[in-house]
Amino acid sequence: MTRLENAYLTVQINELGAELTGIYDKERGHETIWQANPEFWDRHAPILFPFVGKVNGGYYRYKGRKYPMGQHGFARDLMFTLIRCTDTSATYDLVSNEKTREVYPMDFDLRITYILDDNVLTVQWDVFNPSSDEPLYFSIGGHPGFNVPILPGTVKNDYFVLFEQEGMGGEEFEPASHLRYILIDPETASADADNVRMLDLSGGRRRDTEDGRVVPQLAPGMLKLTEHMFDNDALIFDGSQITRASILYPDRTPYVRLTCRDFPSFGLWSKSAKAPFVCLEPWIGRVDNKGFDGELKDRFEEQKLDPLGHFHREYSIEID
Image (cartoon, rainbow, N blue to C red; front, side, top):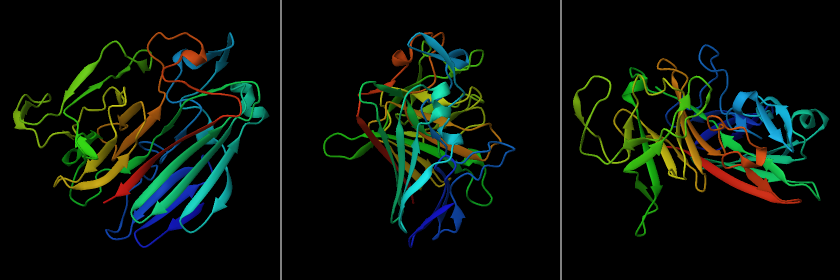
């Protein structure tokens, strides 16, 4: 286990999966990362690679051959090598090997770097294609879970999520007014991409879909956590709609902010109504669309890395 620390936060990272397992807020005296209670979900913040979500039917096709693949790929279950470490940063490395090639016949070098700066933890992903003649196809995603509720005497449904986009007219961020999302088809565990839903976050008054009451919308971009929100698994937002998502305390002030520029998809998930956590998930690629049976290269937002190429992306977690 690796420990990063400064005056604001203490961060814990496990070499298994290079998984973030803790962000302790020193000022407020609480742990923000979900602590993997197996009663609900036995992970903290797994790295999803080389797949995000499930492949249709449990197999994917590459060069005409079918390969079995579990949900979210295999990186989260493998030991990484710690190759660099300071008091406030750590870099982990995972390289393809004979075992990974049995289910994923491509060479790769995946490096995960954590950088702690004041109250912000930046997570960097670097993917290298060591092959001199073959492209590398992959998806990659984040899956950090945050403790909700976090304050004594509160419940999960007292909290809110604020969605923001790149701002216009000099503003760095602005609240999202409308978002499109899809759900998981319960029969196939794939994305129901043909059934796009709309989330109105424009403010004003709206009708509560659970009991029919008319209640005031809190503010533009804001969504209240409700009991049945995750009945169909994650809410999936495609089309690079979300640049920053924040979980808000019951008084509507920020608890944690996740900023993720240039991510095509975003997931909002919790295991159940009773599970005391919420995941904010920045994705590049995602679960297969319902009925998809094509080649790996044709999966939704599948990344192609040319021979000897390098891919870089990062997101940040800010504890307020």
